[in-house]
Image 1 (cartoon, rainbow over the protein chains, first blue to last red):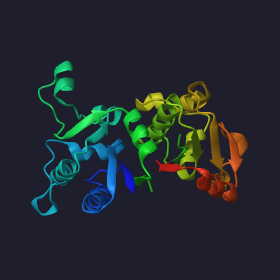
Image 2: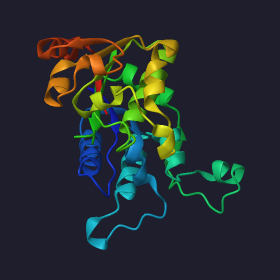
Image 3: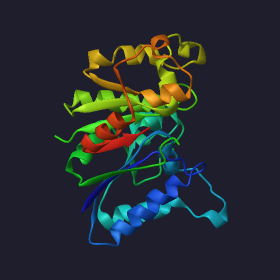
Length: 132
Length: 118
């Protein structure tokens, strides 16, 4: 089965962020496939290059990077959600005259159209961390 | 093309999920995805007719909701139980679409290919 994931949960505020990661890791280790992982709203915070979680909590973005490498899958952030939260890639930082990129690779910026296309090719779409 | 049901259940200005639901609905409609938008839970507070989002420094959501038909988001519904639970009378709201009872909401959920909650 092909899954598309929409991650809306902020790793600092909601267990939905780690649930999404664990689900993706489980899919990667199975016969199933991921067609896309898209981060929107507060979910984009996981890609902060400068995030320093406490040592005993682990670094979600490093684990996401492994999933991305294993599945040859991009990790894409809704560009509007990312920019309003200070998440910029190299070209965007340069364009805006900012000191540094804040987006950790391999996360990248993308439009909502990317997610809507993933939704069309997936057998199931799962959301993580919607408002309760 | 798979159909998309977006459930908007967040307050209009407490967090950004309400604005994101509207953005996603408009993006879907622009790409010819059959989009349905359902206001449920605290999302019905987005339908209060007098809002001053601009004074909070954010987009005024009531104006965005009013403009949805212009962005081809034409299938909008409101969950009637959510109004009753919040003592909101339908005639005091700017309703973008018909009220649905609980059974109709369940039918809507069953009929959609993909459901996204915000």
